[in-house]
Amino acid sequence: MLSLRALVRLGIVVLTLASARLGHAAEAAGELIDRVWTGHPVSFALLTERGHQFIAYYDAERRLTIVGRKLGDKKWTRVQPPGVSVPGANRDSNITNWDSHNFLKLALDREGCLHVSGNMHVNPLVYYRTRAPFDVATLERLDRMTGDRETRCTYPVFFKTAAGDLVFRYRDGASGNGADLYNVYDSATRTWRRLLDTPLLDGEGHRNAYATEPTLGPDGYFHLVWMWRESPVAETNHALSYARSRDLVHWENSRGESLRLPITLATSDLIDPAKVKEGLINMTQAIGFDAANRPIVTYHRYDAHGNSQAYAARPHAGGGWDLVQLSDWDFRWNFSGGGSLVAEVSIGAAHVEKGGAITVNFSTAAHGSGRWRLRADTLERTVELPPLDPPLPEGLRRVRSDYPGMEVQSISVRAEGRRWVLRWETLGRNRDLPRESAPPPAELRLYDLPETELSDAVRVGS
Image (cartoon, rainbow, N blue to C red):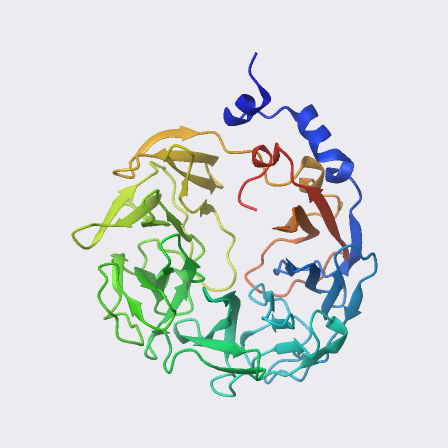
């Protein structure tokens, strides 16, 4: 008889044992946080760090709301920070509209003060910070960091340097005409300054870059992948590109040659020179690493016959990139236009299994989901495997609303030896266009799921 560990390695999940290990928490009611807006999906934020927990979301009236607590406490502190009128829009900066770009981001600085940004799509900077560490009751609206190029902001991202300093990245400008700017925070003076004197990626008034978050790899470098876009419509993505840096200030290409900033289309290290309308899409690009710590970029584009395909790319020792087609699909994700699109193809980051084999998860609307195992030396696909089990227990994946078209939204975070899942329901994406009506508000619930011996068998990609 196979052992439990052997069954897990073979991908066999014994549901009764999984339920026993997970306990009743997977199917429990969870903790009701609030009732929230359901007219369209927009990403909330869940942060669990240093013994504290914070959630940022839009309530039933679409109002920005922040809650926080010390782990172990039952009571949350709830704040709805004030906003100001948004130029050219019939709303305040703390009220969201129908735009799925208006996601929310949270971060803690070295001192434990909370930083909040979001609800922006080519809008003035929306930014809040607490006066006291871990205390959301002291949250203040600042709407200013450096005071320069902060009137047309989109895509806020907080992340940390290798030394632990807080960095903020955002796009200045619009789709088809923008630049990526980086700020760094000084906790001692409670001020922001430019990390770089220039944008890192600059469309020069003719295009903009859609980049991943800088990813700190096992080699000690931050790795960045992006594609350029010529206009607001998605089919004008092109020229998949790459850069790396140890300190986020000095950047180089995959050959180790220094790049002059700002990086432009002309100076980019091209992974794939795909042209406009050749299938690059900024929703589907990811960075992983092989056993030798070399970056592997996975992405979508069309093949010579115009079909959608998944590709993997890795820097070649002699310079340039080796490109390998992973799929042999017979369909085309024929995306076009502007607004928030529904992803018909998702490709995960390359992952090294025990033993050195490389796997890549994928999901498609046309042909379902699965995993590929790749040869470590060539990245060629060796076998297609069934998908891992879904990241959420069945009871949390099931739509509970009887309103037509509702979907489950969730965020999963591992911290403090636990797995926290924030769950709510909304209608699907609608290209950021208003609907005539919205469903009743949905429950926003937080689930505390213990990590278990079977946890790897009942989750993926969370």
